[in-house]
Length: 327
Image (cartoon, rainbow, N blue to C red):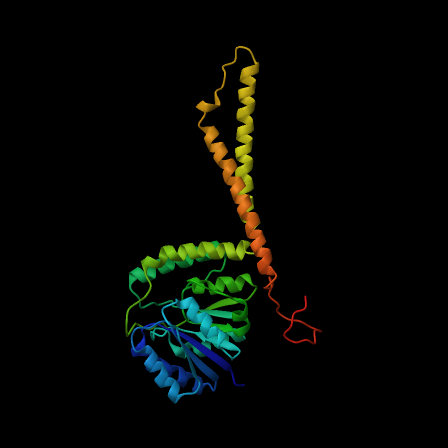
């Protein structure tokens, strides 16, 4: 059976590697008789990457190409590439030749076993320590906070069933969290060990500098996957606790002050001398603000839900209007 495969490749100043990468992908796909297309997305390259891509597209009609006016980031490049795919399976890989196209059949075989998304694991990495160490810490954090435990969330080599990409929307630098976002929608995520090749051209675009950005993005994803459809449960929950604690402390202080004024011989309690009063009022105000923000977030979520489904449909029987959802 002929397999339909779209290969999406974000490109940023990778002109020396593009021809070799194309030839390797072509050889693998033709050897296995895949019905394939290759989609290059030039993310604002300043070298002659676009000229190389145009040259390749002139000799092979299966190549599609997009060129951004400037660098918009890998997530934007992937989303633009995904929107142009036409095959049932979608492969992503980096353009620096560290991802080996010979692994493509292994990804498709893993999908055949029931997975919806297969992520690569560069078990033996040919990268400098200042890239490997932050990556390992980051992968552990992602697994601990989201429950999606992969050895290499940031691996650019992944394979998807196309229906996964119809439900996943990424921006900024959330491309590294696609497995987490997919798992949150109920898709099955798996991982395979892949061959990681030493870098031949250019330099790494990742390292310790992006660790903090990645951690902030992780917090965003954790909120989106855990409370995206019910933000008041998170914001309002924290706010309610702060409000109640502040209110209880102020009530206790008020009772203590009143008792000292009523009972003869008891030392009078002066609230202005109690620093805890300030903290209690702060908790009260913080709680009220968080609950207010939670209500605003709920209004925005309600509006958003009107325009996008909050569920993921696996199968349907009996609806003759194919491709429509009348619920």
